[in-house]
Image 1 (tube, rainbow, N blue to C red):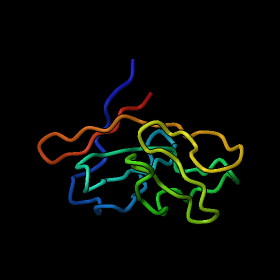
Image 2 (tube, rainbow, N blue to C red):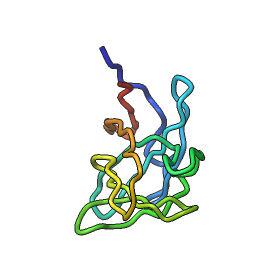
Image 3 (cartoon, helix red, strand yellow):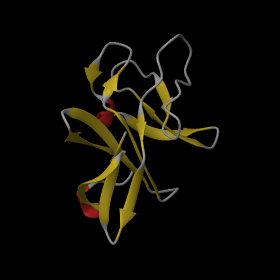
Image 4 (tube, helix red, strand yellow):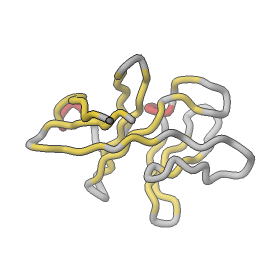
Length: 110
């Protein structure tokens, strides 16, 4: 069974920027998308060249869908599904459920 892990308080994460947390030895990029008032979490490793950089990626919008662009090669990923939405054959990202309760942010480890 998966568990919810406390990863910080809402004020620990900047709006429209990524933050990185390490849970069970995994680096996970966490995003607070202010326009949607929603939180997303994906693996921090870009599948293009296996560097831990997605938490420093550019957050934006792709046809109404929140996305992150790798800061190194600009590959775009849907934050809701982890799907690669740029040209080329790149693996999708692992996504993690996020919830906020009374100002505390939790991540569900799968």
